[in-house]
Every structure is written in C-alpha cells, then in structure tokens.
Amino acid sequence: MKGEKHIKSVILRRFFQKMLYAGTVCMALLVLCLLLGKAFFGSFVWYGTEGAYPLLHWISENQGMFVSGLFLTGLFFIGIFYWIRLLNYFQDVIDAMEKLACEGQIRLRPELREVEDHMNEVQRQIKRNERLAREAEQRKNDLVVYLAHDLKTPLTSVIGYLSLMRQETQISEELRQKYLAVSLEKAERLEQLINEFFEITRFNLTHLELETVTVSLKRMLEQIVYEFQPMFAEKRITCRLELEPEELNITCDTDKMQRVFDNLLRNALLYGYEGSVISLRAALSSSNLCIQVENQGATIPREKLDRIFEQFYRLDSARQSKTGGAGLGLAIAREIVERHGGQIRAESQEERTVFTVEIPAKQ
Image (cartoon, rainbow, N blue to C red; front, side):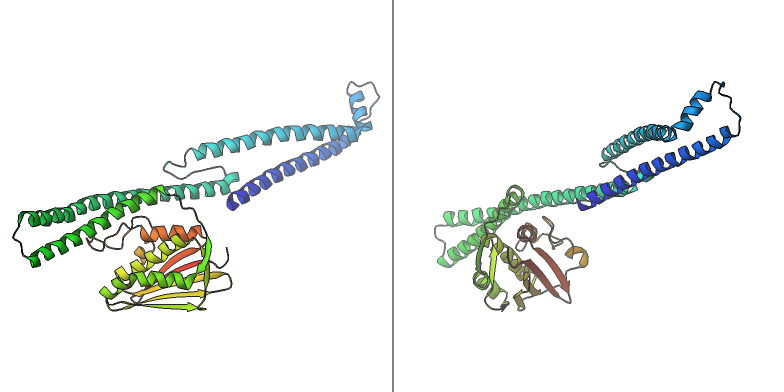
C-alpha cells in the first residue's frame, strides 16, 4: 500500500509538472510573439485606413487583456490535451492489469515506468503464489494418497489379529497378550493417521480467532515438557528448561500457543539424536518475549530450511510409517505466532537446530 501511494504521488507530480511546464512555455511564447509583433508592426507607418488597423490598435491598447485571453485559451487546450493523455494512462494501466495473469513482461509508456515496475513485480508475486499454491496442493494430494494407503496396513493387522484371537479358542495367554499388544499398537497408529486427516481439514477450514489471557510462561512450558516425558524417556532425551527471569508472564491464546510449543518440541524430539539434550529457553527483552527450542540433530539443508514452514512440507524425503506427519505442525505454528503479532524462524548449523519464537512482550 505504501509503495502504491508513492507511485501515485510520483505520477501525479510528474503529470502536473508537465502541465506547469507547458503553461510556462505557452506564456513565454505569447509574450515573445507580442514583443515581436510590436517590433514588426511598429516598423510600418499606419494611417488608420488599413483594414487590420482597428484590431492592431485595440491589441496595442489592451495588451494585458489580449495576452490574458490568449493565455487562458492556451491553458484550456493544454488542459484538454493532458486530460486526454491522463485518460490514456488509465486505459494503458487497465489493459496492463488484464495481462497480469498472462505470460510476458508488461510494457507501458516511459511516463509510467514506476507503474510498469510495480505491475511486473505484482505479476511475479502472483506467479510465485500460484506456484506455491500448486506445490502445496500437490503435496497435500500426495499426502492424502499416502495416508489412505497407510490406513490399510494397521487396519488389516488389527482385523487379522482379532480374527485369530476369535478363531483360536485354545490360544495361550502369552500369545493372546502378544496379539493384543500388536493390535493396540496398530490401532494407535490408525488413530494417528486419522488425526492427520482431521489436521488437514482443520487447517484448511478453520479461521484462527484469538482469546488472549495473561498466564505464567514457566507453568505452561513445564506442563508441556511433563507431557512429553514418556517420549523423551523412550529416546533417552533430556529436556532442559531455562527462563530469564524465571517468572515470566505471557499474554496469548493459551490453547493455541501451547500448540506452537507442542509442535516445536515434537519436531525437536522427532529429529533429535537419541540420548541428546533439548534446550527450551525463554528471555524477556525491552519489547519482545523470545522463546527458543534447540535440539541436537542432523543439520537441515538451507534449501529445506527456507521451506519448512510451508503447508504439507516434510523434511523426510520419503514417508515413514512411524514418524511421518501431515507436514502442518510448523505451518500452523507460524500462523498462530503471526496472529499474535510475532514471528518465528529457524536456524540450523553444526548439527544444531534452533527454532525462535518472538512475540510482543505486551499486547
């Protein structure tokens, strides 16, 4: 919007400068013609009987009125000329707008070079957004196909083991427990896949509305870390919580902000090395509250680091049955943080990945 206002002011300023220049030239030419006319006609001897004498005499007696009349007439025609040119500018811009979605660079007359540059930039942005939308849609479609295929595997296993238990009446208790354990594991995987389907639907259909309250950041993070303890123990991961100062308050939509930290911790757990340390740090600056989640794991390549906040984008080059997700966690986290007026970014180097969330300290 600011760029558009600047372009409009530049175009209007240039337009009126040309009108002023044309008016000045018109006035100068009139004065010059009057002086030249006086010098030319003054070289003749007039007797008062010539046909042109009354007109020339009137002009000589009313020079100011004559010049003013001619000047106003000139301005009138100059105004009409530039008004038509301005309408032509508008028509050029309208024609160019119809070409925004087409291939090829937009070309306008030199007087509209700022508009041309702006419209070409808009055209590039439109094409980029279209490309990203197509890629996101394709990733989503691929993901749905994978999920639909993956649903069959655990469902088939659950049905198979339960059928065995029903058919084998003399099955041993040890084997029964084994079948039940496998069935439960496959049923949990089935639930995870179904939740991913719901996640895709919610992300596309839900409009995030914030209900902000002020809560203790320490208690929020401690609760989230506590819920992750069984998963941390499974990979022998230690989570270290560091707050400075220790008592920090955060004004946010608690449910949605908890989802942000849940997604970041889950991501750190998923891609962190077994037996490593996850650091969860929070610090207060003059204007922002900064929370960082750092894990030790494989360095994320730069080209992937720039895209991990896109919808349905996954770091895994191939879908894994146990760790595969919908690729929405970080995209949802970014949307929630931005709705809070903050920003989220990621850095990865030397086998350390840090996600940083910054939101205004007071909202």
